[in-house]
Image 1 (cartoon, rainbow, N blue to C red):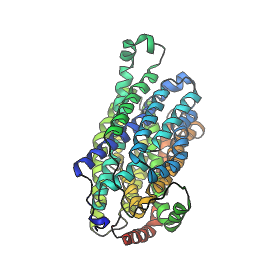
Image 2: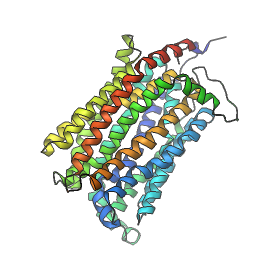
Image 3: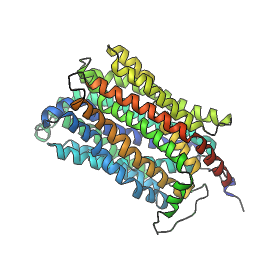
Length: 446
């Protein structure tokens, strides 16, 4: 009888097709999540909101159910059809985005972001588990790198599509005046970016196949227990803490940038939203793709040279980039220098996520991967997404309370988050090496 290591892996071309769909889905979620960053000014004016309230809508509102739903979704990922979890989540968050176009108050917009968060909680646990069973261990860093590229592509598309949608809103309204005549431009932007996600969810439901589970998978039946998860988290507690907290710091800064960097260009450099969108898209897409390629390449290069702590080193480098270039691009005197700094941070945009998914799936048994990644997603949601944008809003309202105060507020988040991430990763580096060695005893090596 053949061993698990001898079982053939899924067709390589089809496996990359699935990754492509997951990338597009991830990108779609990012577009829906961050396009609001281009719409801060009109939303504030129409709904009479403060920076703090805008920060809550962009951060806490999304992160609330994004975090709360992750652990139940992790159980589903480990016990049920992962493809159903992924396409179902895509459908839900796209509907939440469309609902944002119907909002006329703080609380209705808050509620739409909550629905979006609940849907997007599925993409990382579900996709990372699928990829682990579509690709052998030596190919996973590249596959995760490509998947993480969805974030950068999504950011670029969000800025590009957001800018186009802002300029196109009047035209769309003129096509259906009786239906859209009462909606503001920012409402219509939400409609434009939300509808494609519904169509993508249908395509995923029809064409993605569930792969056979590997990596020492043991069926867990229908009984739900936190004991195996708790045991796993306790066994590798310092290593997992380092990976998760290091990523949280990166995610916190990324989300602060997504929420407020366009506003910085409005308030400090006096650019119009369409110009900002085009400039950030031209930087985000090509350099985000480079980031995704180099992240997987760097992890593979380090692994071939026997560096079992490669994911930790990669995450530390991104934290350093935020502390240096992220801080600088917020404080430089010209928009051109700010864009140069944005290029430097974009080159590392996906490194932490790629490294974290590689690390978590490397040291976790298959039957717990969905749950461990769910804990990771929960923490990145509660701390990274919620705190990042909210902290900048609070600093802007209560510490740097002047027109250009958004710049030092955002710079402070970049600097403190980057330095804290480096410290946490350095603390857990040796423990992560031990966890990798323990996982090597599984035979197939994950």
